[in-house]
Length: 113
Length: 112
Image 1 (cartoon, rainbow over the protein chains, first blue to last red):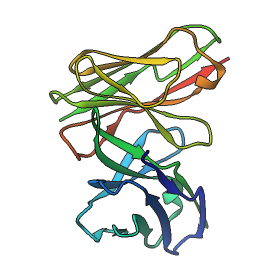
Image 2 (image 1 turned 90 degrees about the vertical axis):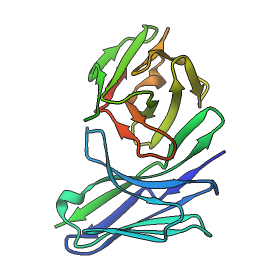
Image 3 (image 1 turned 135 degrees about the vertical axis):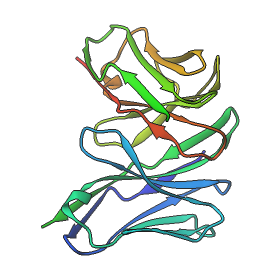
């Protein structure tokens, strides 16, 4: 079945860049997403990329997609303490019953002042 | 604009009791609807998704069930809760294929 994997923890210093990596198995993925979850809250969409794109930049966020290797990364420039959260990678495709999205386990980002 | 509501926000239920979590979406028609669970220290797990009224796909066999009695209403149920059902339950919606998925604020369930 489909699977999305990402490392569970990442620690960076304030002001440094953070890079969160993700791999997925479904070659028919159409969209890939990054979501942010702050403690006790729901998920917030950060950014997404179409599977026919290699890169997308949105202010401090840069998403890189290597479709051949099925590897997705999220780079956060000038990381701030407010960026501390869990970041979920997700991919979407059309399943047998319709459209569905599969999430990774989430990477917890710790930002040290 | 579209909004999604789910309730209750928190609940504490004894083992063996029933469960009903409700979710409604406003401002859109014929959405795809989802129930996810996030267990403590773990990632998101897709439980059910629905592309239309009465059409439910189950991703993980368990003692939970889902129903979609109306176009924009999605209900997660259990007849008898287990301790392992504790977690953070998220309802979500999307429209069409490949579109962004939007989440509700979540429901914290603690089974004691």
